[in-house]
Length: 148
Image (spheres, helix red, strand yellow):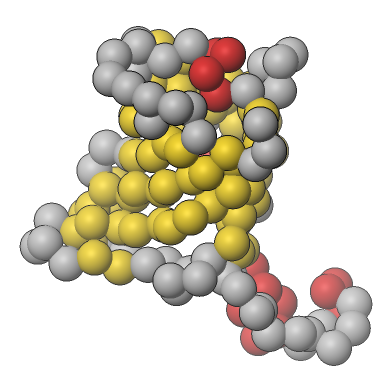
């Protein structure tokens, strides 16, 4: 489905199918591997939450605050999450971040371009060009609707 997306189009729970970073040089990376897992949830009252992780994460063997620094770092490096409110703007959804694993995202707006399948059962959310680790690319996340 092309064109504008409404809040109602997004409502519900979506399961991650794939997360790609399409780099400017044409290569593709998958930050958490081909089998990354995640959900994004959009609620009728305008809230959203997303969590994504590497599948089969390394166990830390106990309590996160008392785990060795390397284990804590690995746990953080293999997971991302944020939540807040959302609104739509033409063919985009804008996430107003209220809390995030990445503290710099709090009080920011994260714009994602939405491509929704005609049957409403799958969608792609993509970013504009982002630079991370000195490399620029677009993040493209494919989702499938849970239930419905």
